[in-house]
Image 1 (cartoon, rainbow over the protein chains, first blue to last red):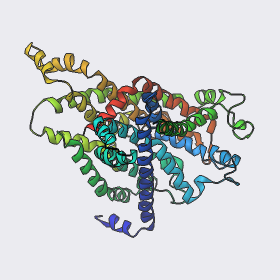
Image 2 (image 1 turned 180 degrees about the vertical axis):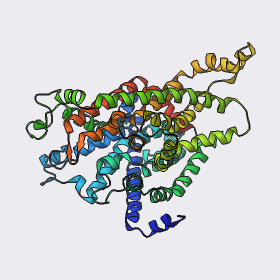
Image 3 (image 1 turned 120 degrees about the vertical axis):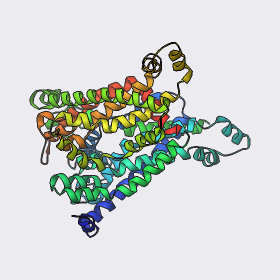
Image 4 (image 1 turned 180 degrees about the horizontal axis):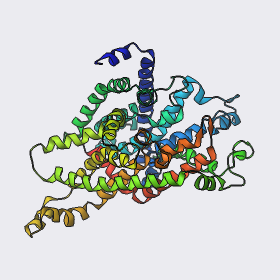
Length: 241
Length: 273
């Protein structure tokens, strides 16, 4: 009873591995999502033809069930007949088939890929809306002063997007850090514990091993991190009222 | 400028390809026999295409039952959510009472607390009320995340409606609820549509709670039921991808009709703040 579960976890090498995996998965996914989302928003801002149609099409991965996303990538990463292996071999980038989901490093890359695919459109749409809210005359003034596109991005676009960028990134961090579906469906945390994250580990300890106290302790270690991020998001989102 | 346009369109082209390939592969796989799935010629399209996987899925598996369960839970959740969230959103933006701001902030906080932290406590609560292993478990659990999210979303829409409109109706003798129903709700239709779409999609897609709270095959929703089509290392990929097509279909269909409202709702929350 008491704090025994919490104390035991600090000495548990599997738990350490799970925390590390969660950090890699979350920071790797969110980092790429921010970059891709920014590219998507900049491209849509620049290209005028069929902007809302393209925006709608690119947002589709974000609305379909995550389980289906994970399942489809599972099949695409299949070692024997998956489209990733077959295509890489056909174009000559790879000689032998790779067991993507069967090796620690590639399995982590695979779950991150599926998460990015699902999540970057949310960044793109939010950032585009943010860009459209930046007053046009700022850009016109900068153009008159002879600012280059790069300078306009650094001195007008990026500062103008600060709020949207912070809020969207934090919300994405919260939900990526707690992602269960993609890892569970793609790898079940494997091979071994190579892709186990806090959410899948909590589930396994609680509902497979039926060690509830330990499972709650695992998820409670997330609490302080999540709480800090929630407080910051809430601050930003309620500030204007 | 032409150079930047070309660059923008190439980025868009690449992103569309990245987003499109998995969907193409899903459909392609669903139209192949298992022999065709293990053949490299042809590999990138089904030849001949077959609907055998769809027939097997609908005829020999529990998929139709899971689909019915998913629809029931999603529709039920949507109705509860829209009713509660529209009243809550209205109250939090229009009626003055002590603790209102705190309550509004709490709604946002509750939305941001992820299911990973909640599924074990929720499970014990549902067990106390003897709701585990029934669709009621999901009908009770899903509004815990759809209501806060949709309330927050609708507050943005309610705020954009001028107060004078309902005040005029109330001066003319309407009750507050009457003014809400006849004046405010019709003006908030885009918001209500966005909220319904989000509630339906979130419930239709949900996996963790469905996995933990429901065990019997006949009570499973689609995302969890699909596990029954995997036998150890044997995955019936043809049927699984056919199921994926049928599961994403309704969401994409709804989304096609309502995406304008959805994007509006999504960006209103993210940008305004």
